[in-house]
Amino acid sequence: MSSPSFIKIMDDAAKAMVFAKFKSFLSITDSVNDIVFAPKEIAQRKIAEKRGNNTVEFISLWRDGIELDWARQNTPIARRGIMMNYGDSSAGGTGTDRIITVKAVPASINYDMWVWSRDLDKIAQVTEEYIKWLHSTPQLILYYNGIYEMNMYLKFGGVKDETNYDIYNKGLYFVSRFPINLDGWVLTSIDTKTVLQIILDVYLREGTSPDYVDTLLSEYIIDATP
Image: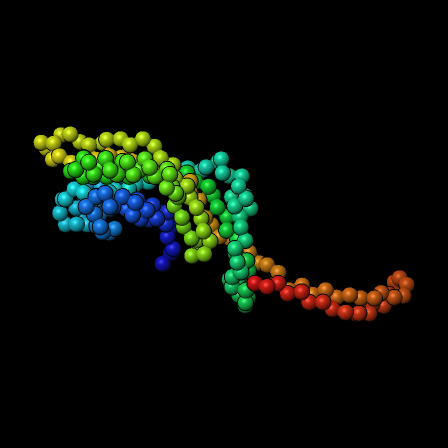
């Protein structure tokens, strides 16, 4: 089974982040059944499939665009990468004779979050918290390989009312859209051969050309520490 893409990992992390941030303002507690990763047009269908009914009090999130962030392309992690640690040989060798280098492609990722509720004041409370988010650590923090901390900064935009006011056919519930832009990274690891031991021999050369005589004086072994 192949591992998930790093984009999917960021999607899942963003979904968990917005649920934890705004759940206290809504009547939701279940991160499985109270939030969906889907565009607005099918979000109600998706939440009904999860819950088995058509209740309206939930959050939906969707990634509607991703592009290269050229402004961050000249950063060291994007151009050269970072040497992380040693790993076992994947080419038939033994021991830790390879070093793992991680390179990152800077990506600007656009998400839209929708809040669905019959209570307009609950959406107003979410809106206030969204606006104040700028002053309370607007970051998504991931740990690559569970060790290396990555801070991805968030940017915010204007909140828009996207309620369908055809209430006699659709029913009355309020929907607001909250844009979130993520300064993300798409990571890739490079497994390259490295040198773990250097042997230095010192010789004394005597005689005349072409009849030189080389005598070994000493030998030095320099070990790298993986």
